[in-house]
Length: 82
Picture 1 (cartoon, rainbow, N blue to C red):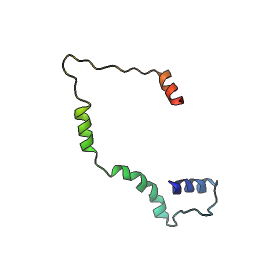
Picture 2: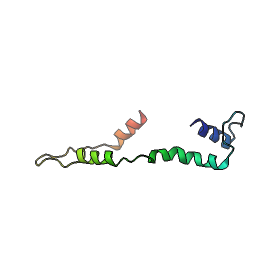
Picture 3: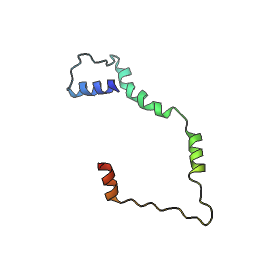
Picture 4: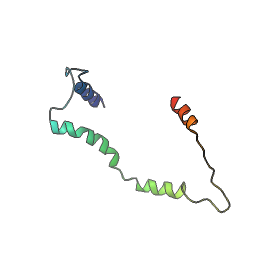
């Protein structure tokens, strides 16, 4: 993350290159964000997803009704401001 902020500062002209640790290889530098964000796609979550759908999203037993949740725009704005 530090290198990303350094790069932003350098690109915007806010900071000078003085001790920045930016890569001199343009290809590596260009691919760094891709490698950083791609790490989230490297794990298969299908088993977790199967468990969630089987346990949390199952149908209710006969005779039971699902609780209806209602949220107003005012409530959302209040929470976001907090």
